[in-house]
Amino acid sequence: MVQELHQIPSQRARARLFWSTARQFWSGDARRFAWLLTIGLVLLVFLQLAAQFRLNIWNRDIFNALARRDGAAVLHQAILFVPLAVAIVSLAVIAVYGRMTTQRKWREWLTERLMERLLAHGHYYQLNLVRGDHQNPEARISQDARVATDPPVDFAVGILSSTVTAITFIGVLWFVGGNLAIEAAGVSVIIPRYLVLAAIIYSILASFTMVVIARRFVGVAEAVNQTEAEFRYALTRLRDNGESIALLGGEKEEHEGLRRSLGAVLRQWLLLCYQQMRATIVSNGNTVLAPAVPLVLCAPKFLDGSMALGEVMQVAGAFIYVQSAFNWLVENYPRLADWLASVRRVGSLMASLDYLEAVGRPGEPGTIRRIEYDAPALRLRDLSVTLEDGTVVINDADVVVQPGERILVMGESGTGKSTLVRAIAGLWPWGNGEIYIPREAKLFLMPQYPYVPLGNLRRVVTYPLSSREVDDERLREIMNIVGLDYLANRLDEESSWEYALSGGEKQRVAFVRLLLHEPDFIVMDEATSALDPSSQEHLLTVISERLSRAAFLSIAHRPELQAFHQRVLVFEHRPGGSRLISDEAIKPAHGMLPHFVYWLHTLRAILIDK
Image 1: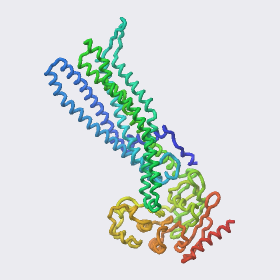
Image 2: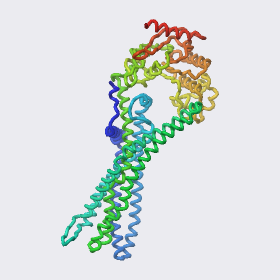
Image 3: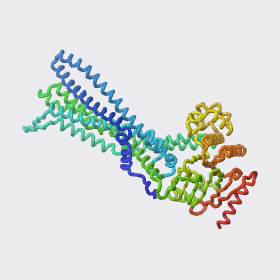
Image 4: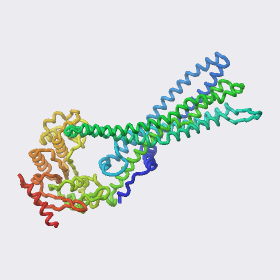
């Protein structure tokens, strides 16, 4: 069963899943540009190293000149310093541009693929229906994808730079530092290449201390990201549901909920603060000790005259470069932890999207099969709709919708009518049986709460078509037909139309979209619930006349809608899932008769079934 495929992966598996996709930036369609940036960054690392090495030599020469009180040599070194400083600063600026361009392009590439997968086949909706660690996918795509792609570029450049820097300046310590002879109690002990040995031991101790002290950093950083995302989501819900909350007077309860969410955020930030404090002990301790250690180690050789002042300063600079290279982990462990937490969160989203893609593949057991065929009718054959865990919602529905037919689907709340709509649309894959869709046929769904996109009113009423594709005169004509003529002069106005339009106006907007699309099959899920009876009658009459060849499948609780339909399907709760208990032709009716017709059909079907 497909349901068994969906298991929350381990932390390591989530990281591997992220990398299996993210590294395709260097092997996919963007590989030429990606490798050009990568090679450029590598060249910059070596050029910067050459500049650092030359600065190290300059440091030796200037101090030797000062020790000799040689004014000409000091002046010469001062003049040399100007182009050297310009070169170092210029290379640093170019490196920043190259590094950030790589990060920006990689993030763009990864985010585009995440958005493409999220928007494919209704996955953005299905994520709300399945188990998994994919809460707040918008935060994972907008924030975690950025954090997951920014640091790796810095890490790669840092590791390469640290490696070549360590090799280069270990050579300086090796040849300039030489051996150290120590005499104690008449015994002479020689420590070969003692500065190299000291730099390695110092770096190992600092790195090991950081790992031990900050070992919980990754888990805490991941928890911080999750609680922050949940807090943002709670604030977004407050804005999106502002009218309902205000009408119910729920401000106090919402405030309490937001305080709880904020409290969770602050608790995690307190834990992160403790981790940062512990890491700061090591990093700041390293900052204080690193410059002093080589001076102390070089003091014996300087005092006995075997090492000049310039060489002491050269070795001290080389020691700092080496320990900085070896202590890369000390400086970057907190950021590494934050990066790994974001990688796991993006990997979790990828795992859930992989599962949904597996569910959507044709032929998978436990999934509804959608089949395109050449007949003109829309057909549901032996269709059972289930939840993700296998619980049956609708059992063995068999319905044929011919072109031009108008079918009303009725039943008490909870019988799975809206779930059936989602299955027909291809948004709900779980179940068994087949849905036969006529090839080349256009299917249009009208939900109870139409979506209102951002932008001007023209974009709102033409969605999902591009407003550029719709003739302005035709659009205004249709708006007049559905009763939105008073908004026709505001088509180019930018506003928060989600909140400016009433529920009835939003449903009228949905009828504008319907008439613009002119589909072959129309599925309406309580699409007129916010309209008054006269408006409902007018709009249904309009689409019956203007879209006379289109088939309607209307899901509603209003029995008076039978007057606009030719057949009525009645679903009823049964053990093992709701069943279709009645499928009969009806005649258009008016007044109170539809109410009696509906209950008559229901009673007759129950008696026959018994």
